[in-house]
Length: 137
Ligand SMILES: Nc1ncnc2c1ncn2[C@@H]1O[C@H](COP(=O)(O)OP(=O)(O)OP(=O)(O)O)[C@@H](O)[C@H]1O
Ligand SMILES: [Mg+2]
Image (cartoon, rainbow, N blue to C red):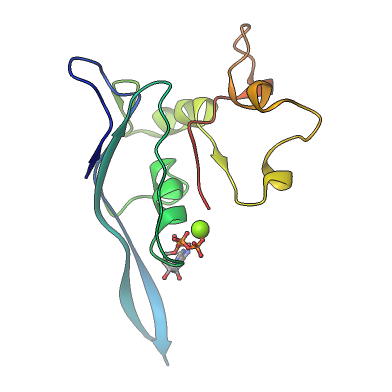
């Protein structure tokens, strides 16, 4: 577990014991579970950056996808800004505030914008510049 929060400050993102298992085909009508992410916990304070480093296939992207509930996590909990993400409407709210920035920056970010305008929410709260709290390779 990587702890990046200071004492007495509520983290923006809190991931507890996140698990994401897939069933993969291993032959004629046979599947086996693949533990892409198994018991991952971390927290990120507002304004902080957490880097996730690991060999190809170790599960970095899957952590991001599961965190945003693009995959329904097999287990564990995700809390965003103090709210536990459980229902469909929680997920929709989460996705307005958090986003993934993919490895290829040209497919993720508009090159005509500055990095700040791409990542800091606008004052009006509109979604033109969503807050992106992390990026995954
Ligand atoms: N939808 C899926 N169905 C089955 N297996 C998957 C799925 N998505 C990812 N995996 C498997 O989960 C594991 C983790 O993959 P993931 O893409 O998260 O790794 P990664 O750390 O992001 O790798 P890279 O650095 O190459 O981007 C891999 O073994 C991958 O094959
Ligand atoms: Mg990846």
